[in-house]
Length: 68
Image 1: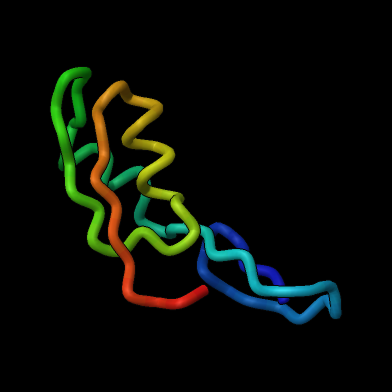
Image 2 (image 1 turned 180 degrees about the vertical axis):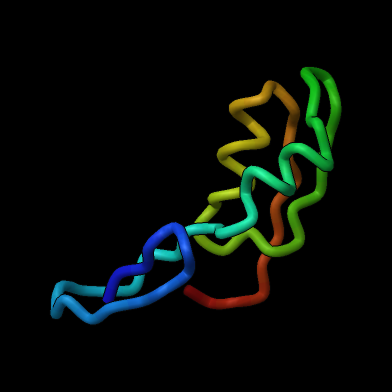
């Protein structure tokens, strides 16, 4: 299965579903992470938000309950 930017998923027979955060731009606009700031990502998952936050120069403490 695969996921597109709009959140739709389709099965392509090739392994696990890849999650793409559909509100990434909106969340980043609202948070406006800056270098030197630390943000807690309580839904780490595949790391989509964490990667964007780190890319903006902020630090991240990431946690997730899911085993995978």
